[in-house]
Length: 303
Length: 279
Picture: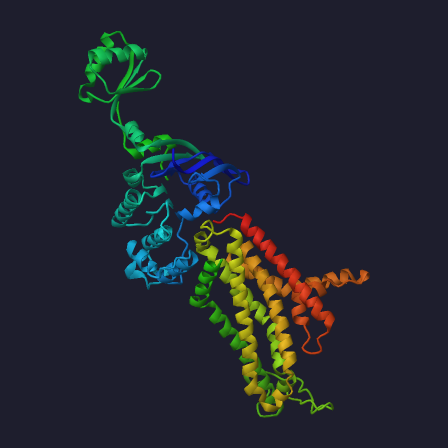
């Protein structure tokens, strides 16, 4: 596997409170990794550790397959929490400072990046007069300034209007598909996240409880008939032989999920009962992504 | 490092704080000379006592035996105004505000996140900030010295200027510049530790104004062992710096104390910056 980010047991402790608890994350090259968790779950702290803004209490990390983190971080663009901007300066001056700090010699780079994020008309406007969405765009401009290979974006669509959200979504997809930029992104707008993420990581109380690809999430959220039976092997045989079911899985003991013939669920029930199976439960299930995460995280979702 | 210094220079140029600080210093210098001018006019009876809120209780007598003028302006002269500006901590107070603003605004808006973890070691980021703060401090102090001299010329006139010992003025300004660089190092350290504008300025001004009293208390406690801690505290040297007859002992002590405190402050600031998380 070609990992852009690989962590092993990363922890962060503030006083007696463990904010990040042995997180082992794996972000493959080319992924758009959706990082999901409630407020205070540890997402931002973990991202700050990866970006070099905070030191982990323990654990190992590799960036682009290397442990020389300081050297590799040149290849990362970040937008963590609010963008770092000098409020009393114009957008152009802010970007000019960044250009000089990063040693970018092309003087028109500032105009190009402002145009790229749709702020070319606001270059002479002071940042303190910017809307939240405009500031977010500035943050994205800073993150993209050095053509990074890996973007870390913490709530990048916060404060954006629907049009702005779509623009950022399209931009991220374009960066990922055309420039092969790997993206680690957190957002509390799960519907939006699900439109771009190729992989997910779920963090709860500082611990990364699951990592899985988007396809698996779709499968988990697929509409299905759930059958709780006493003898799974025999029930499966009946479903295959008598009902000609081929699309199913057995995620847990005694539970079968059938993904076809949902309009004729009663037929499956009848065949199983006639076959001597003790059918304890049979119901149609399925949920949207948000519902799935709510179940997983317990209660109301906030990323 | 050069890239970072380029960015810092741009910030200095675009920011208004240095210019505002200089304007405030110019206003104070003008106020000092203006006050002396009015005192002389009150003494000469050309203005009523109490004009502009200035009341003269002791005129300073007539022409003295050593030939010195009884003009307050000429007695105090450029050296005296310089001493008031530096020794009276006017420069220190403005520097406390300027340097803290310059350092802490990086944290205030989170702009420091654009530097740390972007291919530069934290040490380099800290030293670029320190260097640019020192440049800011040196520019400010040189301007204050120059303004104190230039504004003094028309006020003092040819007679007053003839009494000015320029070598002493230069030595005094040079020593104060050195002390100023050291306290700039202190303010950078305080800014780095507090990372909060109000706290940074308050702590800096508190140290500036009250630490000298504390060292004098220490002097009292240490009098039996014939040791004066206040002689080795940088902020005591600033007001105690003589205007003339610079003794070698003071010069050597001044340089050593400046260097030691500067490196101590810088080291603490650098260690904290490299270890502490950035929020």
